[in-house]
Image (cartoon, rainbow, N blue to C red):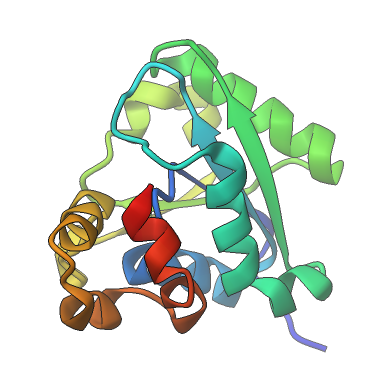
Length: 174
């Protein structure tokens, strides 16, 4: 039986679409946590997300199907019209507790994110915050969408999981 430092980890993102940078974060959380809740957001404010919430969840589910079967990864939607502030973070933490019936004790995020914007200091103090250097894998979903638009399958093969690449035509046409 594996011993994990943390019981419940979370990662929050749009995953539009999921790429190897996202996978790096999720995989790092899986090393440390018994269970990881992947929260796929749809804020209805940002126009950057061209893929539906259901489709983005579908892609995350494809990549992590084994971990989902083993109850190591739980994928949940989070739809909100609110701006990124501490009440947003409070709602994320409530969602996790209502979904897995335990408090999150770990959060992982890229170094470009300002976690203090979404979580109050008292909430951050209760979480182990694993901040990963965004430059380790210099990729973004915006870059992926640009590669799709330019039909750059060669470079996409470097940044997308084979499960996601199987949907190349659909991703490109959305």
